[in-house]
Each structure stands twice: as structure tokens, then as C-alpha cells.
Image 1 (cartoon, one colour):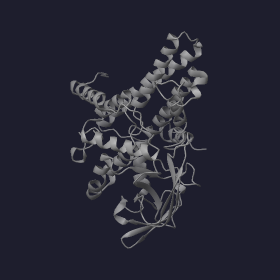
Image 2 (spheres, helix red, strand yellow):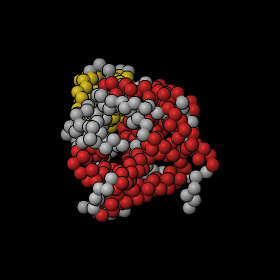
Image 3 (cartoon, one colour):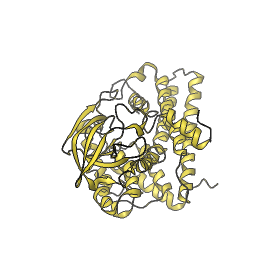
Length: 389
């Protein structure tokens, strides 16, 4: 196994590192889940796009650089390590984007991909429903064909970025007689479509990171059907693979958090603070786990570049990164003691990193992209070959 990067990969990494150091915002923005912060982050997406850094792994015709999967992972590392702003269109560029490339028509790609990469159209995910829990196949939102349109009725909840997004990618039941995975379809829904009502849902920190979406005879063009009618489950699984595996949570995020954790430990030591040995062990474990995840992802990326596929192993990757994120942040809060209860905006908080906000967000990781309980079932049955009870 060759663990070194090629000369061109190193040049690519150095280029993005230099650009970020010269162009990332110096001021502190409002959170992206506020109306003002949302627009600030939208404008940053356009700045990235103009420099061809918004979607470097995409084809050039859609604003990309056609970089390799390894180069994209290096981009993600440098991005997070630089402390650049969060990406407000993550749902679009990392989840729906790859799904469009696989399932979209040429007309759909031309219509949606460039505005997505530019940040002109921000996407929300409309999958979860109030009574479905983690069982996506039990959804009840319906859509029936009426001429050139579909008419939607039902409700979605926990729609990430749903409070301010321009579009929503939804899974709906187009065959009223169907059950479970059959009879589902994948629709791209404009947030201002007739018959839509949005109600913001606040996170633990009070910011409206989610929304409830109500469809009351909502009219959506049939041109916005992704894949064929009834193929929604297959299309959704392409998105889910991206959500659980490499695309949504590349290692850069956790490498940056691990570095912050090590630096926090060092700073506390330099101030002659007493740190129990078991906390030092947790810092080492967290840093080691982040590095292990990094190399596991690079190994998987190499396999994909040589013809491999992303199958059920996306589930154990999702379990690992989501629990790693919680561990890194909870260890930092233990190190900080009472100061760990403060948000980053507090004057006495650790100013190098907003540990409390990061911790609150990390708690959602074992839930979204399919709860870890469900992912463990998938690993048991499809990876380990264990029988169902």
C-alpha cells in the first residue's frame, strides 16, 4: 500500500490551501440557520464558485475542476482545517448533486446543477415524516399525476435547511395502493410552489435549522420527477449512500476537530491546569480515531477509483463518524469543565473553537442519515451476513 500523495495531488492541495488563506472571510458571520447568516453563506458559495472551488470534483461544464476523488478529499481537509465558513448548500452539492449525475436527464442536469453550485438555489431534504421515524419506506405523503403536473398532499418534518431553502428534494408515494418500498417516486419541489406551507423548527440552540413542510394540493411539474415514476426507492438509496459515506462527512471535519482538541489540551497544560490521565487518554483516542477514519476513507476512495462500489459499508462508516464526532466534542467539554457550558459567543468561552455548539450539533449525527440502530442492522445483515431474528 502506497500512503504517499502524487506530485499533482500535493500541488492541488497547496493551491486550495493558499486560496483559502487569502480569501476566507476574516469577520465572524451569523449562523447559517438565521435569515441573515443564510444569505451571508449563500454569497460565500458564489465566491467559491467563481474561483472554481465550490464543486471541484464536478465536470467543468457545471463549474467544477474534474478533480479526482483523492483530490476532493484533500480539498475537504484543507477547507475544514482553514476554518472557512460552513457550506450552506451541503444538501445540494453533496447529496442531491451526485444523485442528479446518476439519475438525472441532461435537461435536469443543465437546469439544476449550475444554480446549485453557484449557491443561487439552496436545497433542503424532504424525507422524514411525523409518523415514519427511521422507517422511510412507511412514508404517506402522496403525489398523483394530473396532466403535466403532480399534486402533492402530506407533511415532511426535520427538513434540514428547510426554513430558508429554495428547493426541496422529496420522496412521495405515487401509487396509492402500494406498500413499503414500491410505488415511491423522487420529486424536486420548489419551495414557493402553490400549496406549500413552511414552519421553522428550532435546534437545541434555538436556531431554525429545520422546518416542517405541509403540502396541500401542492402543484409540481412532472418535469421535476427524478428517475421514473415508482423508482423513488432506488434513487433515494443513491442519495442515502452519499449521505452515510464519503460525500457528506469526509474526514476533514473530524481531523480539524481533533486538531482543535489536541490544541485545547496543550493550552490547558501550558496554563498549569491539572488534567486527569483518563482525559489525556480520551484526547489520544479521539485524535487516533480521526486519523483512522481518514485512512479508511482514502482506502475506500482508492477502491472506488479502481471500479469499486459504495454498498452497505456506508453504514459502518456512518456509525463511526457520527460517534467519533460526539466523542471529540464531549471530551473537549470535559476538559473545559464549567467553561464547556458556554457558547462560543460568550466572553469567557474558549475562543479557538465553539465546542458547545459543535457538541449540540454532533448529537444529531447518530440520528440523521438513518439512525445508528438501523445502520447496525444493515451492517449485521448485509456486511456480516448475520440472520434476521
